[in-house]
Length: 467
Image (cartoon, rainbow, N blue to C red; front, side, top):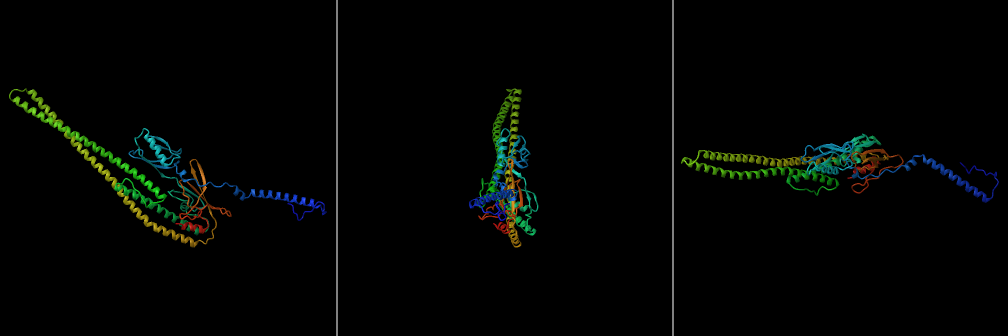
C-alpha cells in the first residue's frame, strides 16, 4: 500500500513544476482509492454480514384458509343418515383418496371438508341413493411439531385455536437464559394456554346448551346475543349444523312411522266397509236358507238345492270371520307402530334432556375453574416479574413451515400467530448483534404485543399481562 509519509519523488528531491506536481498527486490519490475500494469489497464478500444482506427475506405468512384442506393421513368421520353401512371413520390414503363402500375411491386431497362432503353427496346421489343426507367432518388432525430451543421438542396434538405461544408452552417453554426464569416462563405460558382453553370450552358448552334447549323446546332455530366474536360465531355455526341435521333425522324417522300408521288406518277403514258388505251377504243367505227350508218341509223343494244354499251361507260366514281376523291384526299393528312412534319421540327427547344436563354440569365446572385459572396466571406472572432482573436481551426467531397443497412455505411468526395441523415450529435464538425479531402482532387492546417467546424480559411480561 502506498504511504505518502515515506514517498520520495523520482527526481530525488528536486522540485517539479507546480502543475506537474498537482497532476501527479491527483493521479496517486485516485489509484489509492481504487485499491482500497477493491480490498473492502473483497473483504465484505466473504464476511457474514454480506451473506446476511444477500439472504432472501422470509415469505409472509400465508392465509390460513388456504391450508384448511384435506391431505393424506387425515381421518374423517362421515355420517350418512339411514345408511349404517356407509357411516364410519375413513382415512385419506397416500394418493389422497377416500375408499368408500358402493361408490369406491373419491379424490378429496386439496378439498375442504365442506367441499369433500358435497362431492361425496353428489357421488351417492348419482345412481346409488336418493336424496342422501351426508355429514363429513375432520375427526383427527395431524399434530404440530415444535423444534429448536424448547425444553421438550417433539409432536403435540393439535387443538383448534392453538397459537405459537401455546405450542411453545406445550413444549415446556424456552431454554434460553437462566433456568429458573425459563421455568417460570414455561409456567406462565402453560397457565395462559390453560385459561384460553377454559374460555373456549365455556363458549363451546354455552353454544351446545343453547342448541339443546332449542331441541328440547321444539324450536326450529336458535340464536344468541351473548356469544360474540369469531370463535363464538364458528361454534354457533357448528351447533346450528348439528341442530339442523338432528332435527331432520328425527322428523324423517317419526314421519316414516306416522305414514305407516296412516296406511294401517286406511286399510282398517277398507276392511270395515268390506265387513259390512259381507255381513249383508250373511243375512241374505240365512234368509234364503230359512225360506227354502219351509218349501222343503211342504214338499215343494229339493234337498240338493237346500244343501247348496247352506253351503253358500257357510262360505259367506267364513269370509266374515276372515275379515274380523284381518281387522284384529290391523289393530295390533297400528297399536305397535303408535307405541314405536311415541317411543322414538320420547327417546329423542330423553337424549336431549340428558345431554343438556351433562352440558350444564360441564359449564358449571368450567365457570368455577375460570377464576382459579386467572388467579394462577396472575400469580405466576408476578413471580416472573419479581424473579427477572431484566438482564436478558437475546430475542428468539420463530419460523413456521406449513404445507400448502404440494409445497412447503416457511414464514416468520409471532406469539399470537394461529397454527394449523401439520405446522412445524422452529424456535431459535436471534443472531447476536442483529437485533433480529419477528414483527410484533397487534394485541386485543390495540397496543403492540411482543414478538417471540424470549425477547427482553419486560416485553415478555407485557405480553403475559395483556388481557
